[in-house]
Length: 336
Ligand code: AMP
Ligand code: MG
Image (cartoon, rainbow, N blue to C red; front, side, top):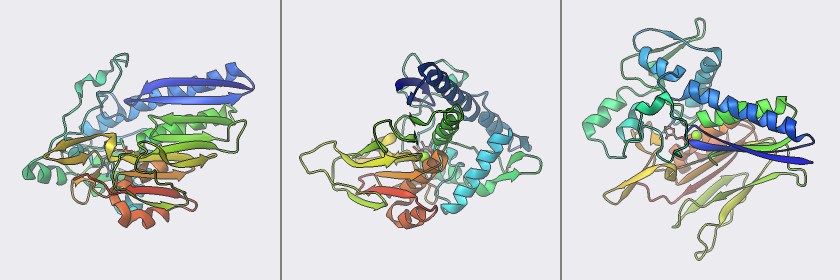
């Protein structure tokens, strides 16, 4: 049995994969092809790359219907369905609000070796609390109702100037899903692929176990409470700092984690996270961390963001969306 590991910097994070199989050269070739697919998707879906399909769409769709590739159209339709299913908590039109709270731009954690893409135009914004007027202006251009998808012509049209799409809450999961599909098609039956530790997909199981066990660490110390569907959790004792709250067994399943701490800023003693509640236009206050397990990494990614947004009130709704969906929510947040 051979084991290979590969890593690639993409989507402002590090993707890693570990693959087991009989033929190391074949595993490596499959792994490289899978990581190439992630690069390709970043070039297509990143709003920070001026040449990307999404950037082109954002620039033109308020003026005219813009024809997009079949795969992007399908992803936008999926995002529209997920928006409806989550009562609007997952919303890819959130971009103007993300910008207004200073979360636009790629994280500065990019290693210096990261390729200098044409996206250099978007440097990271500094988080800040917007004025009421800024907030109102941004809210006026947010909402899936302002995006028209015409399946017959495969075009996208925005209802007004200022509408902007951000696939940040679904793109990594989608990339992980596409990449693992490539691995499976290449014959890989045992492997794990993750993007920045936030979305991970397991193919089969490791050679010596029944499952891939993936641990979720506590986001922060403090008075936390847990709500879960189908997942056992253990509360670390006070003296323990960063023990996993749960270990999730994965086999042909994906796990996605969303956390306010993924990107946040503090102002006047309050903490503001990068996941915005479309209902209020303000950073979600419902939870510290949300995790969702499903076969599809794309859905797990979108639904973990929705669960973080809705908090405890939305736990049952999200957990009931798919048969077998497992979910974990950690509340007790000190965010705003
Ligand atoms: P994730 O880490 O998957 O939860 O994605 C968070 C990112 O998605 C943010 O940094 C924003 O770019 C974007 N985003 C923020 N709030 C939402 C929301 N309510 N629905 C969809 N995308 C969002
Ligand atoms: Mg997400």
